[in-house]
Image (tube, rainbow, N blue to C red; front, top):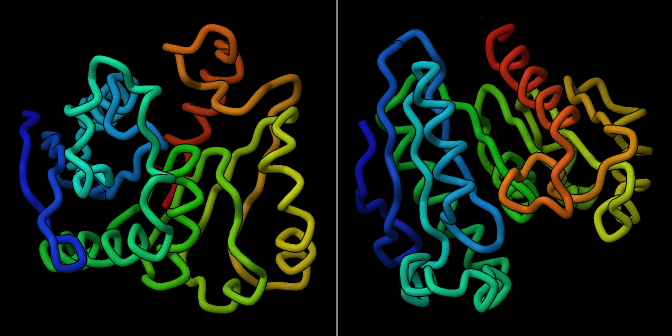
Length: 219
């Protein structure tokens, strides 16, 4: 069952999608969308997780400027970058706290921009698990505040993201944290997005999905 709901942001209400899976044993998921908002590809990912039994809540981080639906005719005309990072982080913390008040445990899943914001969120809150697909990592100074188990996936050919990663990797190499970073050979940024054929890599996308489910289930 999928429906539109309202969740609290930082001093504002945010639109959101909630999908209620049927398996109460599956960890509930707080999902952070890509930079174009809750586009059809994101709705597909929400459905896939709900079909496995997960409850999924995905705030619409474009709510402050009209919401994803306001740009449905031309999703490329808007980006979450039109709102400053500090506001996004505050909105995510408020929405996460709302969901955490209803659940004993949570996982965070983020895509692209959503993975970048996911790193920021887990440095401020401690979900049990985090799955982050090709997102810019946090400043190394934030690493000691992370308590979650993390699986983070990256594309081989993604310089905008990958060029930011060496300081984080060096810090993690000296850290006892349970964080796994994996790069998928021959792929580009957003390689799992089946709506973007110029980037989509079906085999790697299938492998990433399998690794994600394995990570969620193994914990």
